[in-house]
Image (cartoon, rainbow, N blue to C red):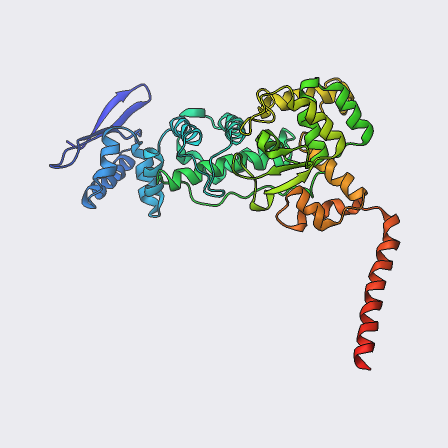
Amino acid sequence: MSLYRRHTKGGAVWYLELRWRGFPRIRLSTGTVVKGRAQAMERTVKALRDHGRRDLLELLAKQRVELSDVHEAYEKRGDELAQLQAKVESPLLGEILDEWFAWLRSALGISPRTQRRYAANTVYRYEMSWAKLLQSLAQGRDARLSDLTKGFVAAFRQKRSKEDAEPATINRDLCALMALRTWCSDEKELALPAGKIRREREPSGRERWLTSDEIEAVRRALPPIWWPLFATLIYTGMRIGEAQGSRCGDVSLTGRRMAIHDRHRRVKTSASNRDVPIPDPLAEVLRRHLATIPHERAQLVFPSPLNDYRAARRVWVKACLRAGLHDGGDNPAPNATIHDLRHTFGVHAAKAAVPIARLQKLLGHATPVMTMRYMRHAPQEFFGEDAAKIAASMHTMETAAGAQAR
């Protein structure tokens, strides 16, 4: 027996039953009341047998794939069968994510880009992004890895844009998606949907910096225990990860220097290894702060809770609201971020006419390109002096050339 009918509420549906030695038994509904279509499906199954596709026949026998889907994929004669099989055999996304996050937190979690362990804040950001990505999948954690297609990415982009998410925020979520894809390919050798993920075009660098009045307002709004950390960011231009990873052995109040290196912490690039000066206002703040913690070389300068980025962000948001650094409205939101303290240092350095080469070194930029964003704040009153120095240099060169000619 191969084809037979069963009467249902929808009519007499055709069923398929095939048995071959060495192949799984096929006993399935064709889902159609049309005999011609049922016979076409029967021919498809026999063709799969003739081609030795035991793998697909086993998926049919276990009802992990619909007979109609296999038939349509076979009829198209393209790579649809391979795509269908990959989708069916693809692992559950929730299980893959659990394994990935466990790997990120383990000693094996090494970034292929930086060749360093993943920072706790990076893992946290990935978790937040994947919470949004899963919300955009109809099946959520029960979706398959193969569901992360170009179509899904396009739909996710559109959804986030309608939610007025900034391009940088969308790109952050897409980075989390790309990080999982890289791990699945490199570490698990799993089949993934083809195609690159295009990033959103971001506007030219956001620049929000604090005036001296705003700095003072924030200082008054912050809990006293938190001011040393934020003062360090303001007066040195350090990244918050660099400051939170600082050890007492890195700080020399006598030499007015704080060393930033990759011995105890993560640094963004090799150019980030540097010494930053400690100005007098910060030196006094750090002197009082260091007197409150055990003074051992390996001791964190900013111990718990100051070394927790999420805690720092919560404190910063509350301080901004109290200091009036927000856009107003019924539900005011801060208009300055922690990273804006780094911009604050860069802008005030440019206003003070610090040369770009020195400012690049102070900020730990790998190239002058990032530093150049602050140069539009360079004071024009120094331009005449600069032009005079350039002219004097050229005059000296001309004089020397004339003497040599004689």
